[in-house]
Image (cartoon, rainbow, N blue to C red; front, side, top):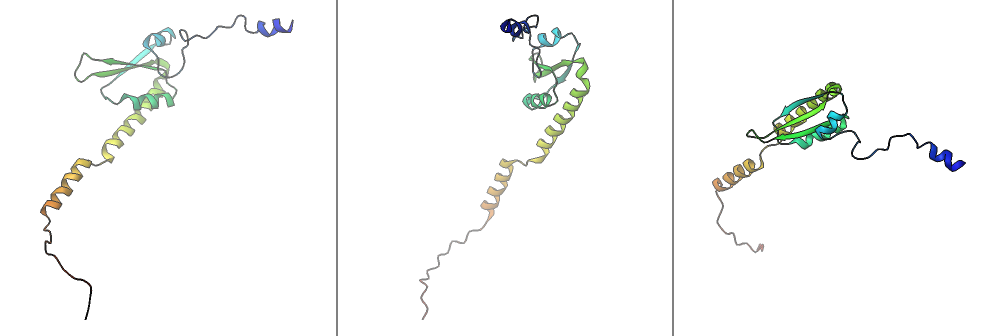
Length: 137
């Protein structure tokens, strides 16, 4: 009887399989549409989409990324649920702030190297040899 009661709790519950699991975070467009909450999209032309994915996961947004190769350079379409509009705008604000700070923060290393090479070329080297054995009389 105890075994029946333990198993009886599982009867009638929906079994979660990878096929019908909605989950959180990155999904396919088909999985987003199946949830029936409306889907909207935003176009991103940036090639560094992985940073956005990590920020969107942080905000708990369900999204799908589709690459559009018909245009040059290729663009990414980010689909998300209609109810996640506020969260997605916050995620985009953080993403754009992070992306802008990365580009303005670091100077070019190759440029610095070229400048230093020019300084070394223009420097006059002292080519005279000084023979001194260190003995004083």
